[in-house]
Image (cartoon, rainbow over all chains, first blue to last red; front, side, top):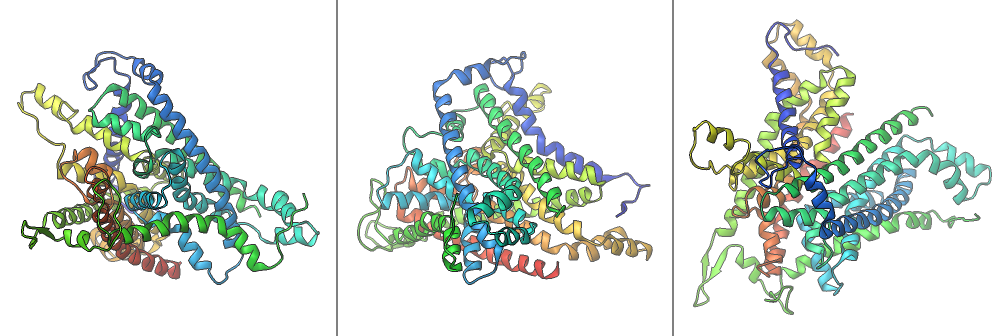
Length: 268
Length: 298
């Protein structure tokens, strides 16, 4: 594929695209720079300082919010990834009646707008009189994490050589042995990728948590939202930068795992 | 570990599928049905619903009750719904206008750089929307990055009021969802046979007509997929209007959230949600049709 742009003329396309990437990252850069600002007034730069990070992380409410977020994301990730793996193993093996319906139900959380999921889940918990709190948030998170965990696992299975499992069975391995010694080692990068995506989606979720969180079950995004409502502050900048870094670290991990995913599948 | 699943294929399937399918069915499909039922029940002033049947919530979408119980046409909610649709359409058009050239640029780069640029497009998508919207307050708000230098130069002496309006909401929507426009367009451009483009050039076709007559028609599935994704997500967006619109200019999701919190009118919130799902359902229907067609081509 060769370049089709006219080289003699000035390259407007390149300028436009570079401007786009500046637009995409400028707000985040501003946020990170201001988080290291010494001044109480967030938008007046005086000197470099890390005091807002110290202040934010000695704040007990923020500490509690971080712990809550990690609890929710941890449990939701493990459960959603387990369920997604089981479903992907069935849905990739053969086509059968109900195949399409099962696929559709699993992708449903991707199609329904978050606000609709949020208020529907709230109504459901109210109808069965389930108390709101960390448990209700975890249940809601498991639901929308399943399709995100499912996608990479399914993709990994699609590229896998199914005859290896048959070979295992021919050698009298039982179902558990086939899974433990054949399927799982091959599937591991997909499961890892699915787990990372679930974790990112869960830790960043805001609207669904907002509606189904009871008193005392504040997650980090909910805490940040309540701070933003009070106005711009250097503490928000610091906490937001930390949450941003968590997401970026996770997405880099995902990228590395899925690269490995692509390479290994093609070996077989 | 001696562990064998039943040999019956149906039972094996159910063992694998049940946890995921039942979880989503129980905690998403049933809740949506319950919400639909709630929309036909009277509101409990303390939140939740009362027993009984009522179409009040659906009437409230269009009418207001006068003191003598007669219905007067009241377009205030329809205006919010209309504003949501208009903003979502505008966001879709702007993301397309920006996203297409960027995807076109990325696809022409050498493999290593292409991978890096795609990764840069993806990162914001996976980071918190709340934070990304908040960052714009630092730029657009009072004493923000835009106003401050203008103040210093004496070009303005009052706030420009860039925040808390349709402009800021629209900007937030474009900023939030543009990766979802670029990625599908890129995917279809990547499959494009560039020999066709070269052939057209060899035949002295102008650059604009090459794009119009060859590139755009061939990557139409990507354009449509990206447009529907951006439209559906913008329509249901909660964060841009509540952070950048300052809660003054509502969109559909803010109105819904408001009914379930301060207004305590769950049935009306339910009716609004059903309307949102209907609009999204129409969008998704076209999306499924387009992606099926795309599979057919590939």
